[in-house]
Image 1: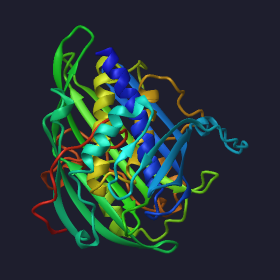
Image 2 (image 1 turned 90 degrees about the vertical axis):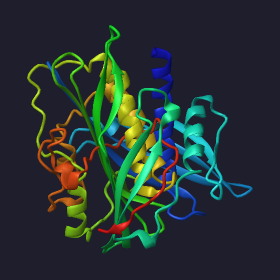
Image 3 (image 1 turned 60 degrees about the vertical axis):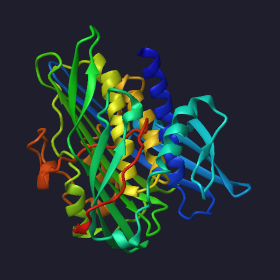
Amino acid sequence: MKVWNKRIALVGLLVAMLVLALCETAAATGTGSQHYRMISSIEYKGQTQYKHRTQELVRVRKEAIGAGEFKYNIATDNSIANIEAGAEYNPNWSSEVSFNMNPETRAITSSQDELTFFKLMHNRCVMSLSKVSSEQIDTTWKQSFDLSYLGRAFESELKFTVTAIGLNTEAFGDLVAVRAISEPFNYTIQNEVGEVDSLKCKASAVYVFDPAIEEVYLSVSVFEGTTKLTGKKETLRHELATYKTDAAGASIDLTGLGKKFEKLVRKVGLTNKDLKVKEEGILPAWAQFDGLRAIKVSTACSGLACEGALNPVSSIYIPASRLVTLQGLGQIPSAAVPMGTVSTSLAQNVAALGSMKIATGPTILGMSPMTAGGVIGGGVGGGVAAGGGGGSSSRSGS
């Protein structure tokens, strides 16, 4: 099981980086570099508490290599998390991963052994997903993912309710926002002495794309899972926000997203309440392995549901998957400068969101703002696995 989890963690890193690389495709034939800032928070609450918040920059480079294919390189830099206010920033790019993609078939190829699982997931997903189109703006539909190939831990199918709306910004003109909110689902977890229980989960995400759904400007995702594996309630929560920046990490101008977007993003379920750490501890064994894997899979699936095809969102969930592993295992320090909640950091860094109420109150499984309309919302983040069948159905006006 430890070997499997190590493979999952490594694959998650690569998948998240791959997704980030794909996110840079503003145009199917475009090349160059794109930059993003990623804000990530992991919280655990049980007999002890664990809180880890950090930021990192992501750089995605795309170049044509002939025969209609493109090569992607994704690199991350988390040193920004510990930069004191006003200090000079010197990029320290690391953890680079590369792969090739055929834009017609959307298939991934790579000679790196550590990408084996990601290639399987990616190439399986693109066979069953249809890209979100302009015809779906102002409609709501269903999207499902067959996860049976992942084994017994996940339920065989993960289902989302997806809604798309049109937006208009001052700097970029028309954009499209797509939100995916999952139905409740269970994930089988196990503690260090072999006891088994279900992690009751919910996941949701919202992505802001260009009209062609080829480039990500902003994304927010939330995952929450609860269990009584120890006899007492334990909660694992992950929040992730990613937005496009210039090369120095400053946000692009998203002025004009407006009230329509504010209403859409609130149901994703960002919290506006900071976790109070009374007795600090590490993540329990089930959370370090099963819990982090659940975050990564559900984060990938929620992003895929928003896009309708595995392309730019992979540039988000691949680096996010790696970051989740580093945070959950305590392999990178929390930000030296207190960040507050993800919603607070997002509002402070992206001027267009500063006046919006993008967060809800603290959530309780089954009784949270994410249950609006009888559907529970949640998660984003990693990119360990996602895929399978399921298409859109039963569309209705939003």
